[in-house]
Image (cartoon, rainbow, N blue to C red; front, top):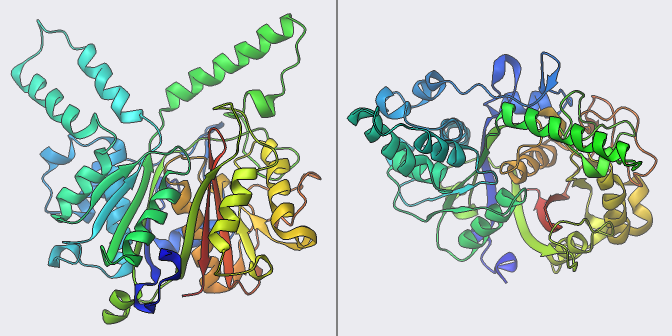
Length: 439
């Protein structure tokens, strides 16, 4: 199997990370800025009483990192493409890879996408254009934007063109597990010798007006249900929270805050990293994706059967469950995950579950879809590197349903972390487990 290759030079190392996430001043971009936020559980999702992770999408931020790109071209890029370019630039700089000198000419440039944000906006722009009034320039711009932003490969296409890459280039869309699944694919490509370096970006942008309207519709749903004498459990039927902060693992969590953003992770073979003197964050040991055996494409399996199997498959032949020191959870503010993840952790670790630290940093930035796998790998890699467990952002009063240690508060806990699991889920209980260890 690729996870147990004989040649240690084919080990997959995490050597760089870059971001375009909500942060002080509207943008968290560097690994140092990211560390400051996730290590203290600082939340950057509130904007004038609305809880949504808004990222600054300024062409100037991209121009600063890519001065050779003409403004005329940058103005054609969608917000999600701009964020993807920012996080890629930061990750390559963090890894010490100079794409201008050809360091990425044969690398895999891969992207993970969840939502159809910019795609639908582009279709609407064309549908709303009056044929009788449109100029040649306007029609040309619409066509160019459609080619650049009207397909799921929008981010990957722009990234690979900027670095003039000739290596593998594709997009994975698998809901909120997208970048986790893609990192697993990159790991196997490195183990098989197909590439030495992979640049993996998860990116999504969500429209605040759209989310506000949807939240209003959910309120209307609750009103109509009340008129019928039906009580709606907001945690299960309306998990979108716009007026209060999400609090994973907290008994008072109102639901999930959405957020936009992009995260890029650079992974490379050990041999390649050592040749250039790179300092790795962690080693990626395995990734597995499994689904719970249910007939519904939407229902939640509270036993977490798919995640239990994915985790066992990822650990098989590499580590025993009692060697796992930490779990980065996949909870997003909906209390149903408190019970679900408790069942998963208890199935995997038995009596150790109550003492095992399980934390999540989603509340720092909002639930952002495509980047979530990268978020777990980035945060967990920093914990492995620093031998510290970061707190669960937003968790103040842990829910009694959490049968593990959610590390509430705003202080990192010193603890040796040799091996860790990172969880991600998507609709239909498709689950990804990534196994990470010291480099």
